[in-house]
Length: 333
Image (tube, rainbow, N blue to C red; front, top):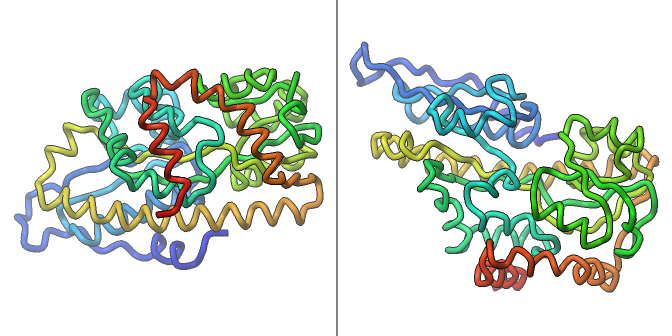
């Protein structure tokens, strides 16, 4: 359950956008924020919080319309809509950007980050920030990283070592890196939409998957998967993006204030995502339907070494120096 602080904030009565000191006939800047998840998720709450603060701090100058649950554009159409200017803000999964900027594939590399603190250090670094602007030549500007969390493995058999995954069919997002991740384990990756995962696992079309604790619990995956391996092997994050021409065309004071709001919202979204994953893991344990396998440091290192060839395969596209910088973020400064 999301904490009351954020719930209270997004549910508060929005401040009027009446003109104030501006001319009565001036129209506010319209910002459509579309996403594909439910409003009660950290991403959904973050979009509502952004709307609330933007309209409160820029009364009469900005109007934000939030469209959750693919109600404006679905997964396959939202990027095109952004580039056409039909929507101004999106927050797609990082795995969706491989066709726009190959270096962003770094976030799909398995066992690159030891924990979310390392992710935060890298994303706050010069290299991490540079990835936000790496698609501007194609009309896309990244504004922030919003967390979902670290991924765990699920399966219909207990998996302690990499060899336990051989021959299994795993659902993956459409990502070349994630495909290769399972191929090096001699497992079979299967691309499947998020909405089809439960039935796919239930019917045996796939034997396992990878996701965060919060996504597992919200989709009731623990009802159809007897085993989870707490691998923390990869990252599911979102990048909040905007149309570059639109963003650069905003009045400087409006853009500056929206940037400040985005920083504030991001901190709260990421805190909530961490809390939600902890609560979801505890709920799965309480349900008693699945066993959670906690890897020893030695077992986790076996998994990491088994998947390490994926790093090498994509080193040319991502950049060896970028991978090295991300790996260095595992060491606290």
